[in-house]
Length: 605
Image (cartoon, rainbow, N blue to C red):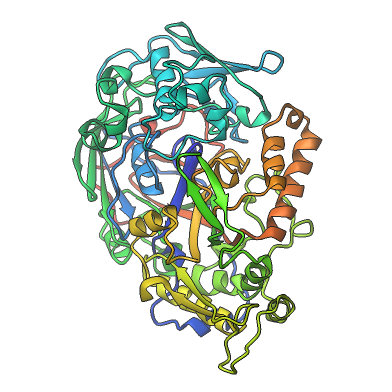
């Protein structure tokens, strides 16, 4: 959300911001598999070698309509605003109609290739954002400095109903006074002229140089939204049905939860798109392979990798792939969110407060087997919550081994912590001798969601823990995240996924003031790490790297979440798409506005 932490269903979108992930069939195995099959894999599963680019022969036609399938087993929410959206599906839709202010290099650092430039003055603790001249919104109105300031006014407002007000906004001079209703303006933000704003910070750090880091990466059309009360923005027609954007296409029709139609935006700053239209439709994971076999779509977003074998040789399509900025994890509820204070309140008496219990649940899982059995080599055991694509920020398995399958260690941890079977029923009581039942929430999503959830339940049962599905069933994606975010008392443990966005600093997910800190975990030691990530001292590369490594060691030991799988995403691209680049290092002049087609309809060969 700051970056785009995505509640997964999981994927990353334009400019890479902050969201949660769900489980398209991506989080699970085929329905004929039993839970016990997970650890019975034979031999090695070799990950397919997938390119990030495709080029097809043939002359481009004039215009044409790109047909996009969005694979999800739940309707999209339809919150078309970077300031308010919450999940990966809306983010994927918005990439066609909304842009980041900034361009980035191959390391996701802001460069001068976007519609705005960023200059950071360490000594003055000030950022200067300068817009290119002549920028317009999709309705033809000028995009000005006021539109760059407006998101800060919205997110910082006492009436803001979203989830992105966190430490990065609190770091702006005057923001807390504005947020608390003590000031009508944000004293640290100055509009210099129509193209320039200056923002004064309490501290500056290298995260601000990452797209999605400490400087908000998007503008909002104040001329269009300014007459809507901030408290009403998220539910307004101007965001849900008729949004005004700054991307290559404009939204012309929304069928709620089902489809979105776009037309070329002639005001786009990099030129009118080559395509006339884009039509995006929701497709259930059970139907997408058949739809592609019938050449229904040019591109499929959020393609389920657990079905990879069924479309590996798909006629008429090239399969592109890349490491996702994401991970799947098991989270433990350790406190509550105090909305009035804007911070996590840990509960030392929470059912999952004993880290030995959390660690044991991590060692009980064979994530390597899950990855091989269910994901065709397109998943791998995650040792940390910093995806490997952030190579220079990450930690090796030697430094942070993470949680690998070790039931003996799991049992020993529980024994030493006093979790014993005192009544002979094969299940452990808590250290006080009281019955221990742990409620586990997991999402619906494709044929493999149920088998994986049952495998986890079985694995925990094998170390003597009574773990039951919340409500006795898998939960619908939106309901799942609503309940996890609301700290539902019927959830003790949950399986979810994060799209991390393009800033590896974890403040937006695990900081004390981060509403996305769903485990509701906070410690003084972690507070210091979060401060170090964003400090001026972190401009020193060695200090920054050591901070990342030491934090990952600490986080792994404390285990507020157990990372389970790193992910590779796959995108089928039809052979009538002349050129597509799926890489994070795609040239700055490539984008949806440059995509062309060589035929009037998707081809089947």
